[in-house]
Image 1 (tube, rainbow, N blue to C red):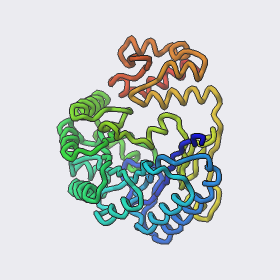
Image 2 (cartoon, rainbow, N blue to C red):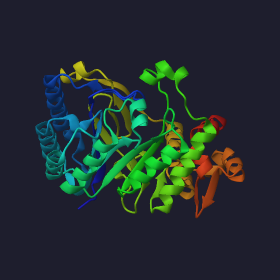
Image 3 (tube, helix red, strand yellow):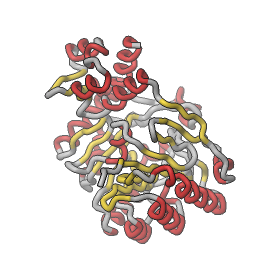
Length: 378
C-alpha cells in the first residue's frame, strides 16, 4: 500500500466576548446565536465538499483557532467533529488542538471536547498580573485561568499550551518574571510567548502615543529572561516564540514552518494545498450565504518558493539544513545569501552539524535580518 500524504486542517471560529485591545485577528462579538449556528452549518458544508479533493491524504493535525472557539455551544463542536470524521481520514493519533480563553469553558465542557477527540488545549493567558490583563483588554482574571487549567487537567487533557506576552504597557522585568514563574508552577507541556506589536485597526493603534511601552533593549531583556527561565526548567525553544517539553512541540504549527500542506476553513483562514496558497476574506455574511470568499490565490514561483523556504525554516531553532537547501535549489545557502557569512561572524547566526540557525540575539531581530538578507539577494 502506498504511503498517503499528510494534511493539516485549520478551522477558524471568529467569535469573541470582546476584542482585546491589541488584536487584529478576524473576530466578531458573540451577540447572535443564530449567526453562530449558521456559521457552523456552513463550516460543516464546506468541510464535506472540500474532502473530495483530498482523497489521497490522511489528516494528522487539526487546529480550532479564533476568536474564541470555546464560546461555541458544545453541540456545534459535535457537528464540526462529526463533519470532519465523516469527510476526512483522520489518523488515530492526530493532534487535535482547541484554543481556549479562561472563563469560557468549565470541566464539563472540557470533558465533552476530550470525548469528541480533542487532545490538546491552547489557553490564552498573556499575563498573571491583573493590571496587565486589564491593560490588554482581556475579559478574564488570573484566577479564571487557574480554574480553567485545573478543570482541563481534571478532565484529562495531558497536552496543554499556555500563551504569555511581553512588551505589555507598564510591564516590568519583575512582573514578567512573576508571570513566567506562576505558569511554570503548573508545568504545562508547551508555552508560547510573543512580543506585543501595535497593529493597525486595533484599539491600541488609536492610543499608541499614550502607551508606556518598553524600548527595544528592554524587550530583548524580556526575551532573554523568558528563554533562560524556560530552558532551565526543561523547556526547549524549537521556534522563535515557542517552547515545549520534549515531544510536545505543536505539530500543527510546525507544519506551517516546514512548508507542509494544510487547508483552512472559515473566514480569514488560509491554505497551502496542491502547490497553491490561498486565503479567505473576512466577509462573514457572504460566507454563511455559501458564496466563494477566496480573496487571493497564487502558485509560488521558484524564486518565491526559495524565499519562503528561508523565511519559514529560519523561524525554527534547527534553522536551515544546508544540504537540503542545495538539493532543492541547486546552490549553496551561503552562495545564494552571502549576507549569512556576515551574520555568522557577528554572532547573529550559528552553524552546527550542517545547519545554520539564529542565535538568541539573532532570533530577537530575525525579521530585520531576513528582510535585509532577502533584499540583498533580490
